[in-house]
Every structure is written in C-alpha cells, then in structure tokens.
Image 1 (tube, rainbow, N blue to C red):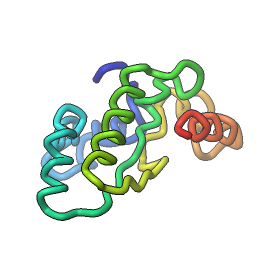
Image 2: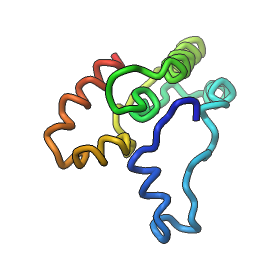
Image 3: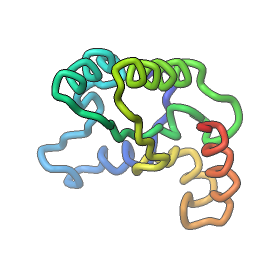
Length: 126
C-alpha cells in the first residue's frame, strides 16, 4: 500500500498453516485509510492515549535510505489528529515489521548489520 514494502510479518503470514484460517492482517481494521474516524471514536470513548507503531517497511521501504513521503504524510496526519483531539500518542518503533529486504540481505535481527539500519530508522522517526 502506498509504497510500503513487504515485512517479515507479511512473509510469515503467507506461509500455509502459520496463521489460523489463513488470515493475513493485510487490511485488518484499515487504520491507514480510516485513522481520522478511528481517532474520533477514541475521543468519543474518552481515551487519553493511543499506542501505535511506525512501520519500518512503510517509512523506509528499502530498509534504509529515502523516506516514503506518503508514509510521512500518514504518520504526521495521525499525530496531528491525535493532538487536536487531546489524545497522547505512544509510539512503538518495532512491532514485527522488519523490512523483508533486510532479512534477505543479511539475516535481519540475527546480524549486527541491522544496528545501523535500525538506528537510521529511529532517527528518521524522530
């Protein structure tokens, strides 16, 4: 979607028998397209904070290098919407979404080569 590359979770979910009913989570609740409505519902429910993750494979589709401008726009819009509704964002930087290209290139988290790539991802986020 909109420049996001496959993650290791996408690969895992596509393996037969790994996820009940063959579900993938490809669309889940479609927060990417419905975030404004979601935040309104959060406000209506009286939530004061919202925990979400910034997808590495969405923000940096090649795992490093050029940032995906559509991802930046999405996360910026989400943060503005949360702020406008008085909801505190709690950001997770990693939630099972290492870009598959880094797994393929050097073995992902099993390699020390991931350290500068994760550092660059974190720096891009903040």
